[in-house]
Length: 254
Ligand SMILES: Nc1ncnc2c1ncn2[C@@H]1O[C@H](COP(=O)(O)OP(=O)(O)OP(=O)(O)O)[C@@H](O)[C@H]1O
Ligand SMILES: [Mg+2]
Image (cartoon, rainbow, N blue to C red):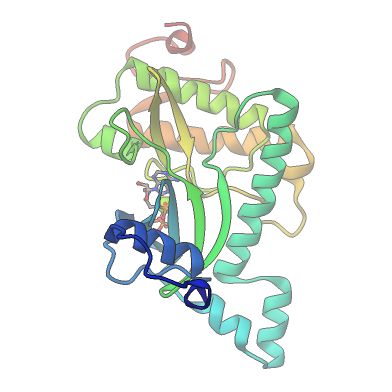
């Protein structure tokens, strides 16, 4: 399209500028040829080309596009109800919307990575998210990795306790609070735990969404499991994590 408007040769440009330009003009993002910077069981995570503060997650199972194109009654019904990655996407977006509205009320950011919409990529539907970073500006380390490195220290325990408090205050429905989904954000000398996926109501009747008390009960069960994973103690009464040899609640006041 631009060629029609160009009367003379454009000034010399760098490859990166050209690439960025092209990406902005294309209605989908080309990811093939880029190496994923992380990945789990379900998706590949790419740096968003030209936007260092964002990531693009592409599901390994490309059912979404297949489902969207299918005309069979069965698939149309499944689409209407929302299944598989499609359902996950709807669930995440709804939960994100709730969290952002709560953020407006509380005046602070939610303990989850910001969702930035969806984009088509040549590898399939991509979910754009805020890139949570560590001190060096690179991808933040997961709590699982910190545990593996033997770095579950009192600072991390304090951050986990604060995270637990925020999950409750923001009324976030945590489903999969495993340490691979929790990353340690470090910015301007302040650290916090951020949940990157595994939240949002999965139930047809969303009791947890309706009642904070019900949600807290199931959050507490998940924090208990997380504590066991990390060799820590979870105390529901003081809503805090602590090292096994110290008293519950101590870590939050450290
Ligand atoms: N917003 C983010 N900021 C920083 N790192 C992230 C972010 N999202 C994902 N990651 C990194 O990518 C990894 C995989 O991401 P994610 O958990 O979303 O994918 P997944 O394939 O669904 O994983 P699984 O299903 O195995 O839990 C995470 O463990 C984390 O290291
Ligand atoms: Mg994960």
